[in-house]
Length: 313
Image (tube, rainbow, N blue to C red; front, side, top):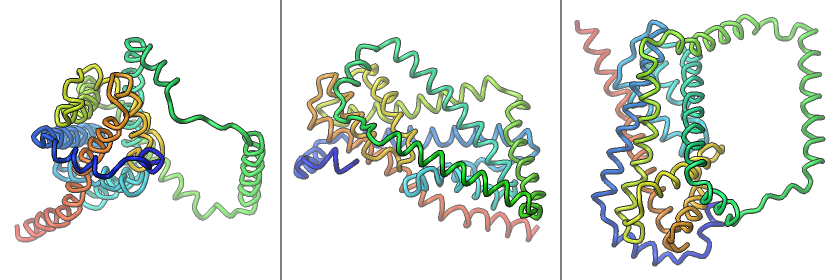
């Protein structure tokens, strides 16, 4: 997908664009990115607290950085990674943490569609033009055959499952599954016992605002986009976010294509749009590569120091 978007771009144009960048705005984008990660850590602590655990914000913050770092390598692997980090260093059951992550993701999804619905009503003509101007077309040929194969596959899996159940194959692991189910549900129910639900909702929208600002300030860093309005940033961010719903590392390729199409609607030629998308995506993800790697190194160091201090006391 990335190759499809950038197959005709001259690499010299990228070099020239990097020389023209105002890196002060790029640094500010880094600040917004780190701030969103900290807010996310604080919000996660709110979900964990009702279960009787008080993880340190430092570990939660570092685990969120590890989340983004891992997502750049393994699609959706970050959620598993951050829960694993907190299980290891805070001794909180992994499945309970997965339950809280489910609540987080569901909340974010609802919030995103609320935001997108408002933008859809606000700037519907641009959404309509974007759909018409897309460089991609969907090919549904062979869909019937694929559906038949899928139905047969699911049927076989279900039949095998019931056969193994009748033979008692699952008896040995049923107790473990029940324990996992109980912990997962407890993690989901943590939202019911939140003391400050409105603060949780506020943090959710604040995270989206910081993500938006993270993209918006990059507009000022690149001369062809420096005069674009905040409303253009909102539109571009909201539509571009759909790329992150796909199981692709950081929406690579798809996000670039969407952003290029969005900027074209607002008078930015496709070559400038391609360069902006590349710059924005690269620099906003460098922060997660860099600080995520630092987080992986710091986690055992800071937690071993705490353990040694407790042993001395």
